[in-house]
Image (cartoon, rainbow, N blue to C red; front, side):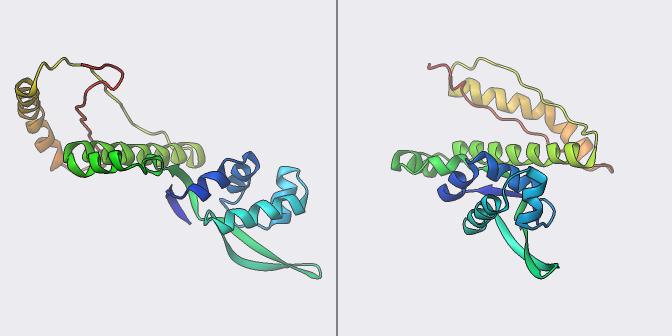
Length: 192
């Protein structure tokens, strides 16, 4: 099972939209049968089996083996990932968005950084929730006002000369790796 999977299929998103299927995926973090999951969730076995098959059909769960239960042979299933994140790109199928991402490299990079940040946060949340780990993290957000392209360039230059030595100092040192992100973008809620 992968730690995280990005959901990029509308069929998979639709499958996940059913609340029982989310509960089944949570139960299938460890391999289990439809009957075992049904007992755990307090739901009828046939109903759970139907939903497990739908999760398997869209690639969110897969068969990992079987076991004997009396005279029966039960199929064992497991979620394909411990956690799922839905890609925002799934909704961006229109040509203007596709072209904007292709034409504006900095904007494409901002979107990619956002996706990586979303995935990192989900993985860290899982470590806190399931492994009991205390996650040393921080988020710093600030607002600056930049009048034009020249001021944006000056800001980034100053920022890099201020932060560059710190990044160099701690980038070469021993210890646990941490990711540092700076994203500079217009406030999407305000039009200039």
